[in-house]
Length: 434
Ligand SMILES: Nc1ncnc2c1ncn2[C@@H]1O[C@H](COP(=O)(O)OP(=O)(O)O)[C@@H](O)[C@H]1O
Ligand SMILES: [Mg+2]
Image (cartoon, rainbow, N blue to C red; front, side, top):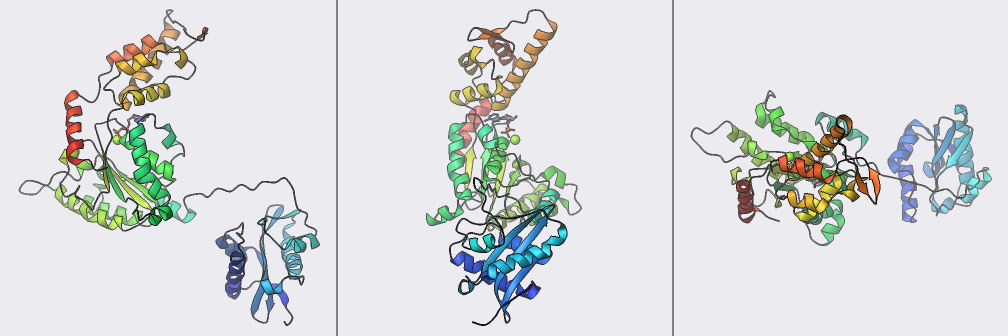
């Protein structure tokens, strides 16, 4: 084989870099830096190539960051190894980076890296006892602008774990939604088509919004809430604004799209002349099939009044599941009380009594009663003398006591009346699809 020379990278060498990258992958090596990072550094930082004629046979790419430089890529085609090309490439790229006044040059290479000799020839030493950590950030920088325009955001990562109790609902959502969406490859192997749209229904305060956000958090997908009431003022009218919003959502790589109180824009179409909302309902009926064609996203609609929805809306083909979110059972109420009672007093509280007394409460009611009890106990301790310390393991602790909770429970009216609870059971029988 003929002679080769080392020179600066030119933009026409991109093909050669790709071929080098591929040769690493073919050899089973997983480079530390993404190809896009390496190519960006070729253009903007420092890169040299070894060429034979027009043929790129090796390359080294470096990036200066303050006082420290990083070799982000070093590769030689298989047939050209063992001739000192790597050593010369490293020397050349170091030379180009020297102008930055670096005091350290580092390289992070896969364990299978074979060009150890090139590095040691250039005076690099292998550092022992290091660990490399990496985490993929779910949203690409390019998407952040679009996400911001939509009012979307990345939610904290722990929302799923913070949903107390509701074990049955959680398991259902985990199995039907989260798992196939998080593991699309696996789902495909089993012939499972990941869900694209679901309805959550149930009385107010049962956790529909909480679950929608928890799903987004669990998937690490951005959460985009569509507010029909805010879109109504847009120039194209609500229907036009809704269409525009979903076009923008289509630009995102991933998203959980949430429409709360969807009955407001998709209620039963009736009456002559047709209500002005009918055009909006029709628009939504058209939007959902188009939305379903795009992978990597999930539409979650929530409603307190599922029986008032347009019948076409719930027809098969639009929503994969229609899932009831009901009042918490004893186990769920226990978990919620444990969530809301301060940890240092919980041992001294008769939680079972609170669970009993709060039958028929929604999570929102429990949260309200718990907060009120805390507030009341604090006021008692600060302004009245009758503050009674509760005791956990015989040690006096300050905080609310069982009586505080029982009082506020007695004063809290359950949001969900018996009649509403009965309607909900009827709705489950007639409309739920899980
Ligand atoms: N499983 C739960 N664990 C803890 N808090 C909950 C749970 N479900 C709901 N909440 C709380 O109850 C309140 C109402 O919940 P939300 O999701 O808004 O209900 P919905 O959307 O069904 O009306 C919120 O403050 C939420 O934090
Ligand atoms: Mg809600």
